[in-house]
Image 1: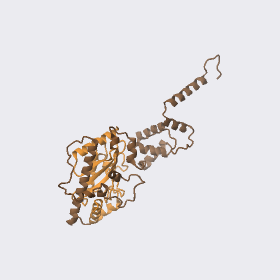
Image 2: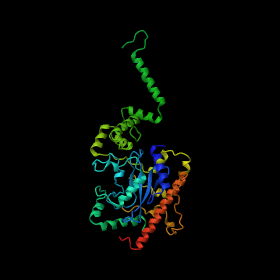
Image 3: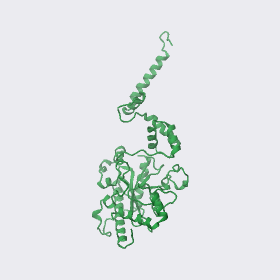
Image 4: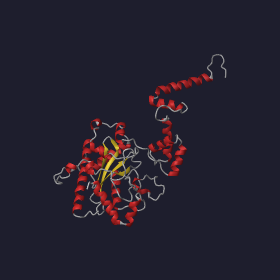
Length: 164
Length: 220
């Protein structure tokens, strides 16, 4: 078994045992430990509140040296989430990944991070978008200029994924 | 150089060494790599095989060299770039330096099933190899083949996890995940604990948002 497999299995077991509030993650198929599904509960006091948002985590073969890629598998309206669902957040960037060097090395990926930390970071990103790295230009603009409309658009996404 | 009185000449020695080397190589090579080295050595002419002949060992060495310079990129991405540009380290490094990144190679159409067949899992994995329909439904559209448009083509979570029959159950009596603090004994336990929590989260969210809508706290 490779290092990545061992590490991911360990994280999976810990996540099931500790069962942290508001997040849930595990392999989609038990035979392929490199592809995970996860759920993140919408943080309170935000238009995401009440909902849960599904995403996939695709781990590289050299995990934990390199971070996984995270992609929401639902419609999302958020400044730091691309329209295809890909999440743009510093914890998912390897130290050499940022050509502009505007992110602090400490907040980027390193092997001491974990799936749980990623999901918690993404959860707080939902609550507090990062204005510096816009991934969805429309969402960034509306978030800055018309907060009410932004919240309405987010609530539509929240309902849609729950079939409401 | 002509040889005299029966002593072994240098060309003869050289020929013996070369033949010996080829024979040993032929013996110790697996059929797959042997065929690739043979086709690679035949001055790079195209073979009927769909893949271009590639010297795996040379490729691996080159990947290692590039990886040494740019450890942040995955081997797969470097390998794909090297294959694309005809195994040139120079072109690869130029591309990395000018664009700042290397695209990951496209995944096979069904990542879950292909890697399942590649990675042997220990201990009775074959028994677990059955796949439930809802896990297939959740398989992400990572490849370009299966992903529809970005619009609301995502099935909702109730459909995705097949929870319609549980929508009306009483949250008090519903089977919820109670395994917190316990270490699941087996892989099957792990999976069912994960799924129980996942389903409970979805059902709870559905009830919460439904209630918010009823109370007028979810305006759209």
